[in-house]
Image (cartoon, rainbow, N blue to C red; front, side):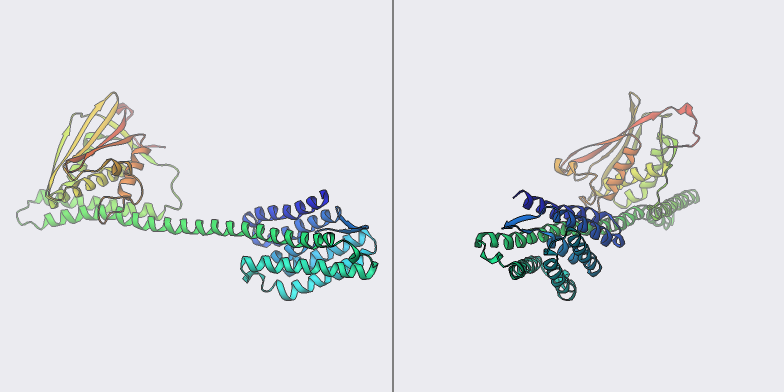
Length: 424
């Protein structure tokens, strides 16, 4: 019984090794690994034979031989065939000729019947076919052994059956285990493939969303330029802002095109919070007017600075502002409030829109969660990411049909550090 367990162990051990290499090793080396581990397994198994009746010994070498052949191909099958015969010849004894007949019969069946069709079979068919093959070979081996020695078939039926059943059941278990590991690997690869497709779709939706923002703002300015009573100063200002937003759209596209090779260093600079908020209010004004929304500013600080990337900071506030404006379906009021407390810059965006429930607030910043009919949720996700990168945080308070307050907390930087650009 001990040797039977050892045989089963060394049949299953190469399967575990195969599973590791099947996933992590280049395909051109897999057959070499298979041939190596199953030949070692075969040699070890033959060193621990199981006594069946009156000195008759058997082992599970053919299970390792068949497994290696079926999953490695014809070259591995021929290699294992010579390994079995060479080591059996080295061991010596009259049983070599029985091994020669059994191994040759198996090789012929494998090369001409099983290997060409095996991978097309279902799991159930694979198990049934291999169990039947090993069972038949075990019976043939008993008959040949009886022909040579004349006593095997006189053994109790239980002992003879145990030889056949041990071969067949261990073969079925081995095939099931191997196929299970292969199916797990296949599912992992499919999952990885699906994740890549998902990332691609998210990328496309994100590009569309981020580029649409500056284009929408530019469209608003162009519509204002059509007004007959607009003066030249305003025209110049609107044109300048439109060009800035188009440049921002171009910058966003460039960032996404180089997304696969992102820059290690992110350009940072000291940003005057009052100036930046004035810029955001001016940029969003045309879009707000189109939605019948008024914008007001309350800035209680003048010379306070934050450290960040200007383009990203603009992108963050524009995304949140646009969401706030679109939440006011029938018009309303958007307030920008800026204050400072204990070295923390506090930026508030207060709207009088439809508001959100606590469940909706909890899911803010999650990709593709949105309250808008045609939204993607990526704008808010990007805003959250930018604030986090600036070592800040966002808190949201809202009541249904009463409005929402986005509060951004950012650490203040010392203005005396100068406005020279630094790198993170």
